[in-house]
Length: 473
Figure 1 (cartoon, one colour):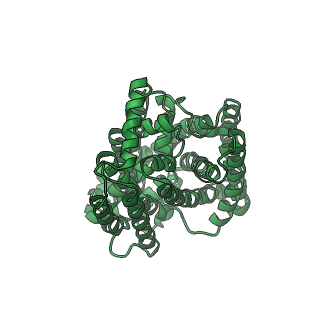
Figure 2 (cartoon, one colour):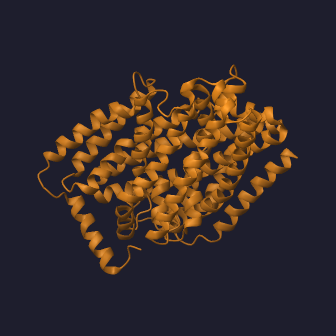
Figure 3 (cartoon, one colour):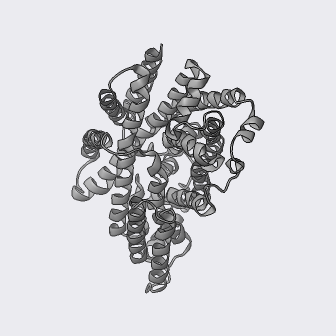
């Protein structure tokens, strides 16, 4: 029964990708579904990407350790969606229309310069490649015991499946696949959450069985919580999937509707694994936190084990192919196009698909020899947070020039990466990153020779052209 359900799920997902492959006619349509996404596709595209596997298993594990405030990582992403929509949506839409941009580094080049584009591309490619590398591994940990097959073999098969889904689907295909994944995630983990609370005797009984702090929203401490929220929210200004949603939306109203509902769905869904983790602390306080979601589901019965596993699998499958697509979009449009500027769309599309296969296989191999992704999610967002802050400031402060942007992103990003991989001593990596990157941004901007930078002038000119032509929508 379990094998049949999993294989059917894979078959439907792959069928969507193969069908959408026949619909792709342009490079922009493949990478960002240029002006071809309605709100019902943008919502699952963003929601499923935000949650991912770390927003399920990792959320439950953190809730088991210190309580319901584990939702703040996902809630920070919801806040990021709304803040990007309100402050930077028009900017990205204008640059996308004016320069036919399909990647975040292309937009940074338009506002700043080619050097800033390259440093951002390196940061984003590394972050997305690392995150993708862990997706087949995470899915393998679910399916290996569920199906009774060798973990290494199933991980390789899943890596190949993710590559196939990425090559065939394109951005619109990812949106359709994620619509399916979103439904499975909500049904699976929502059901387990509801039944687990009843199994534990209701919320009152759960509250009585766990420490008083478990239902406070400032745990494990205020500085860490603030770092999660601010870091993830700022990082979304450089989040490729959000920008793809803005580029791909049929009009401004469409992406605003999609962003708003994706944020709302995330706010609600994040409570499911968090509550499961707290229930786990109440009914089995000596359990391993990393396995608590499975353990609670197993205590409810085999049906709920399958529901939980399918929900987590859907979260991982919604993320893996999309991460690979976003990574190879940048490799194609920001590296290959730079090295071979005369390459036509067919050549660039061929390069991107070859890159998907090569990068996907290499990442799967290295992922099997690395640690868990769950502890890295918040850190990955905070490493790119300084890039988001720079863009946010540059949209509203005309004086910010390419020199200030380049050095702020480079130095702030390096500090965040070193701090994170050193184990985040004393605080999360966001705070030392901002402590270095913000002063550099302010000082170099105040020293800029022009009150209005060249990049800001380009944006204003593009805005006038787009508005005059009525192309903003």
